[in-house]
Length: 460
Image (cartoon, rainbow, N blue to C red; front, side, top):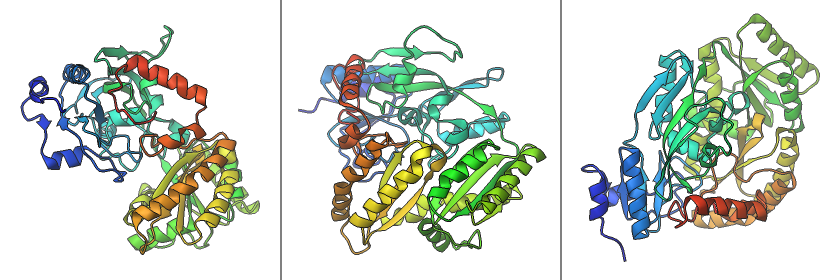
């Protein structure tokens, strides 16, 4: 029996509780689009105190809650399909304060990533966590999934930029965690439990984020690679001499899709099975010369067969298109995605193993590889055949997942590098986490959310 929403409505401001079908559909799903949304209602709080009151109401009425940010996730972590109340943080979108001396900005969890990036730019600073959904993803969601992106090799993950959090636990308690401190040796750092927790412990409502200096002369190299084994050699060659900000990878098949879809010319003359895009901050002639020397060495050692280097910011932006446009280009083919990772030294071995599985199990499917190979993160995309039912296609892909994940387990890898576990990867968690680890995770969940109302069915 569904509870009356009158008492919930009294907690919120006017027009902040939505029950119309359009809103339920919009707020009840994420970018996976594989699940039918069926929430009870959508709550749009404006303050941490309102969030806490909603959580206490949910405990009292035994109603499950689904925290919702920009809903750009690809694992089903923000799906509400079983009569849950969605807590959408869209109205908690203010930057609250900024301390220039510490380069820390305090904001609400509903702030859009791009909004924070622009705030940093306006203050001659830089927020380096960047990915395709920056224009719609929210800071709270980024923190809840420990989002990564294209700059991880130099700047790390979201976790590395979070100096403090305000959270509401699954009990409805409000916790202030770390408060922007650089040094704090007072026991367990609960902040880091909430980072990557996917809304299963509580709801992040505010965050203190550190910023850094802006890069001044970002330069891009796009290189043709003759074979997979050369990718690791290339990474080692450059990392010895240059501080890379990005090291991306994509296949010839991915490049062809982008060139055709966007009417772009081939970026390098020599066609190769794989390509790497490297970015670095050429702050001096010495750094630029070292990069050029690495390029020449790569040619001599046949690690690379061709390449091009940007000579301006505009050219750098143009070269980035060949990597950044891949997801958009293939989206129309409804790809089955696997977001996986191993340590960078095992990338070539893992790619070869998975390629063998894919060729055997998917002989007629189109396969698109790309990823943030500098940190070992690979995106395997299987494109839905135009003459095949998507549900049938999805089932075929799911049958092969255990084969791929078993190879991943042998190499100590992760079934989800940056998209989270959610609903989509939950059945495969044991390939990356031991039974004992999972039991401890369940114990942590029970401590913060004893009634299991926070995003139930996700992650665990």
